Image (tube, rainbow, N blue to C red; front, side, top):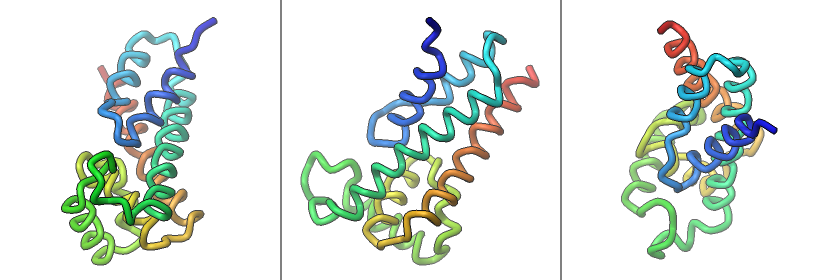
Amino acid sequence: MDLSYLSMFVVAFGAATVLPIQSEILLVGLLLQHEYNPALLVLVASVGNTLGSCVNWYMGRWLRHLAEKPWFPAPEKALAKAERFYKKYGLWSLLLAWTPFLGDPLTIVAGSLRVPFLPFVLMVGAGKAARFLAVTLATLQF
């Protein structure tokens, strides 16, 4: 049984949390094999990555008061920067939840600021899907 799609989901989910994982590497590797449906890979990666960001939203909503703890996934300095960014650009800033260094703190801040869950999921999901689609299209060009 081929577990490639499940692996893509798990890696994308983990990459959206604090785990030091790059889901794009697996996506590109699977695409280069030309054995997998690119649209399905984009969908699976996008859903997994968005759900991983939902974990961050919940952490912000319920655990932000523990941000000074060493195990908390984002340092207070990064959270403060993300909070300023969110307050400046609002809900639209969540389209950038896929970016390194800003994305994880931004999704945690969204939870702590009580951003409604449905708009959060839609904006984060759209940004992440666009990123995976761009990586897929770039990979398939070669």
